[in-house]
Amino acid sequence: MEKSFELAEVKDDKKAKYASYYQKDEASFGWESTKALQKEEVISWQKFTKLFLENYLPRYMQDQLELGFLELKQENIQYPSMRLSFPELARFLPEYVNTEAKKTKIFYQGLKSWIRSQVALLELRIYVAVV
Image 1 (spheres, rainbow, N blue to C red):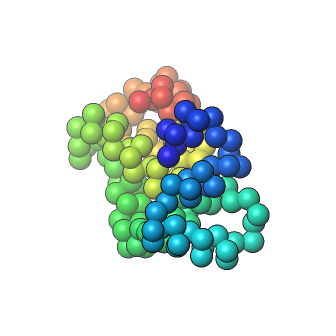
Image 2 (spheres, rainbow, N blue to C red):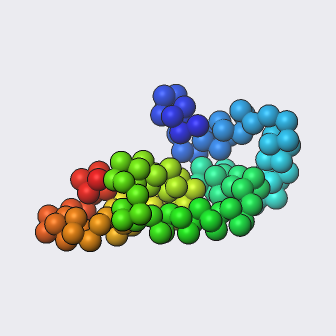
Image 3 (cartoon, rainbow, N blue to C red):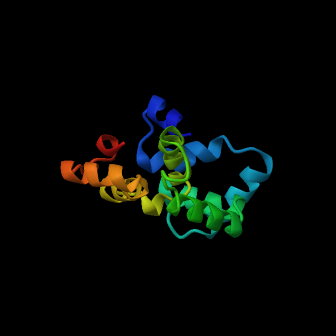
């Protein structure tokens, strides 16, 4: 959906409506019920994704994803896998990466200690630069 938003230049206040348009069957009915319980007239994309995950990703799976994300360490996997796994897991946990500083810090903490000490000397504050 986020690729579609970028291509179609969808503004933030329209993202939830845009995404819900593409939901089918049970997901569509479920969203209509969930939306009816919300107090906000315009539902943000962040709120939409949170509600969607609460409805379709059981809490125990969310907990497993969170644990896997926080324990993502380069010692346990090869660097290319870590570089690819980090954003994949981060998308389910936006509260951990909702600022550049948070995202950078968590990725940095997962690096091997000898690499982390070298990167620390550079004082990089941007996620892409640390990657």
